[in-house]
Each structure stands twice: as structure tokens, then as C-alpha cells.
Length: 119
Image (cartoon, rainbow, N blue to C red; front, side):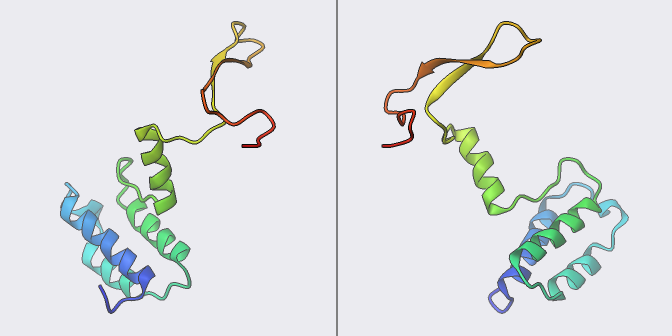
């Protein structure tokens, strides 16, 4: 993909990953190779436009389990799954009255930032 602009290379790589791994080899009736050709040849002004193109392509598969995540979205999910979530350093629990809602701080994590946010 070295001869492609970065957005086009991203679209080509996304297509390739789906092509290799997607179980429905009919691709929901799409002209799968035609989609690749059109989308890889398209001119994208930004990575955001390429992300949109990939999302549009995957939406045509009509498969709730197939989706595209931007690097930032993936990092956020991966970080949360690994326990690397950034926060204010407290544990919360729900207040006993669900009608009123609300939470209570049940523990302050050692080394957490002080309430005024200064280190």
C-alpha cells in the first residue's frame, strides 16, 4: 500500500481485513470487489472521510457484529478492557433510593489527585 495516500491505504486495509475474515462470502449480495475498487480509488480530503467510507461499506453488510473503530475509539475500548481507565481516583456506589438516584463516594484511591485537581 506504499503508493497509496494514507486514507486510501486505510480503506484498502479495512477492505482486506474484512475480505479475509468475513464468514458470508456473498458479502450480503454486494459487488465486494467493485466496492474495493471504487473506495480505494476515491479521493479523501482527510482520514475522517476515509473512516466514513469504511463505515458506509461495512453498513452495507447489514451485520451488527461488523464495525469499524477509529484508532481513538479502539484505544478507549482497549484501555477500558485492560483496566487502564483514567478517572478522578474514587470508587462510587449507587445510593439506596433508586427513585432519587445519585452516587456516594465509597473509597478514595491511594495516589489519586486531590479534590482541587492539583498534583
